[in-house]
Amino acid sequence: MARLSRRATLAWLATGASSLTSAQAPPAWPAAMVTLVVPAPPGGVLDLFARALAVSLARTLGQRFLVDNRAGAGGLIAARMVAQARPDGHTLACIHSGFINLHAADEANGPLNALRPIARLVRSALVVTVRGDAPYRSLRELIDAVQRTPGRLAYASGGTGSPAHAAISRLAGIVGQFDAVHVPYKGSPEADLAAAAGDVDFQVGPVGSALPFLRSGRLRALAVTSRERLPTLPGTATGVESGLPEWVIEPWLGIAMPQTTADQLVDVVAEALRRAMAQPEMVAQMQLLAGVPDFTAAAEFAAQIARELAVERAIVKRTRPDPAR
Image 1 (tube, rainbow, N blue to C red):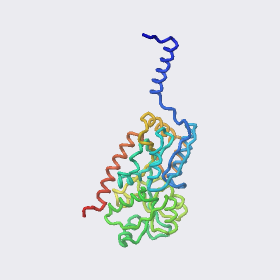
Image 2: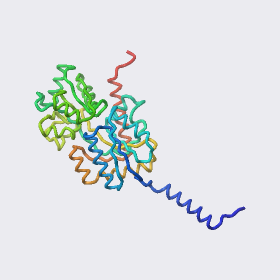
Image 3: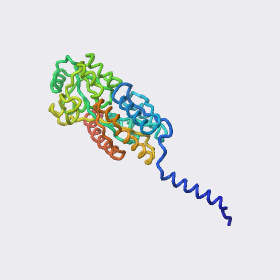
Image 4: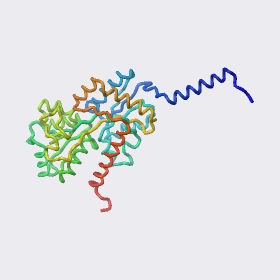
């Protein structure tokens, strides 16, 4: 029987030890520039958040992070781009709670099918706004106007399937009849501009993007969708205070990667995101955007998405016409 030489034995042992170490050690990430794909045009809250996150990640990890805006189809374009990328952590998707609504509406082609949630990072609220000189002073007054003149009033949102669009659909389910014309825009900045210009009667969108218009008086806030009043808009009532206790919507932002990403890499990326979100500059930026840092790791984030999908499926089933009729 052949025997290994001492040199061959040492080489074999070194190779085995190296393989064992590499199997146990966390992957070296990032090894190159990372692309953060954003399903929104430049200038909106999601884009501003992603750019702040890219700066914070670059600062903490010493690698370049590039923001790639891929707006359209409610997030499907961005989701498919990331789903087709290599699962090596160098292409990340910035996802939001509107993906739940979009996915529930068409689960066979939904944006979450080929993505793996990594971490929830921020929760926020939506705000219902009207032009500064509009006659409506409360959410209840606006609802009454829509119900008195069905199909006459129009509202803007950041796009079909966006959290704002879903918020109005949910409001309609709560109040029974809410027939307003939906005018989707490419993103929340365009929707804010449309409401301020009077092109639509009201708008629903992220608080952060509406703030400049609210502060200048071009828009007036009627209600926010958070459970409690926001420090950013302390004088604006919540939906609960407006007599709609079921209308609590706190949109979230998070990060996802391709479905086949390894568990070990998920943990590494999630920890990097946690550290980046804890940076003082990032916390300050979130306050400017009216967001609340709210880090949740992969397993709990995935469970939350599953719960929200179950709720949204029930809403879709209740509101979708029965094809058998």
